[in-house]
View (spheres, rainbow, N blue to C red):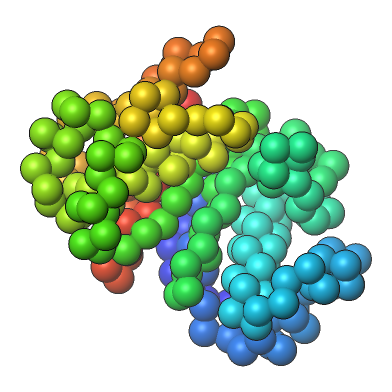
Length: 211
């Protein structure tokens, strides 16, 4: 089980990152039948997507076990936000073709995202950044990726639809060397600041956000 990073932040957020090295069949065999249902598997046709699904459930299971939480599986609410079955612990997951990560907190909502910096972010920056954020980003691909991932994480934390990234999600100015920055979610009844933690893994930007 290639867990390459496991840590706890100062506010009781626990993180685990799994590097995907196992085969499709090896991963499937690691999931108990009461957690992986035939219906869930049938709903995912692409083999790589199945691998990502298997790993997401396995990293959550690993993190739950390490925290002493009985793992009964993961379901999604009416907005599509995943939650732990039979537990009040909050969680979030993210995956790429190479890594899967999960975070958990005893009670506070969480969000996370993992991306690799790319030139595409320059072309779509106006869609997810405010004018002041675009100025701060200075066209730097790594900073743009931090902004994007931070906003994706805030969006997942909120867990509902109809969020306008360049209006409802805010990231305060930062330097790309920082390991912790600040974000803000302003929508409907919410006007809250959140801590945003940044990890850099093999060219990827991993972002975790919570209270």
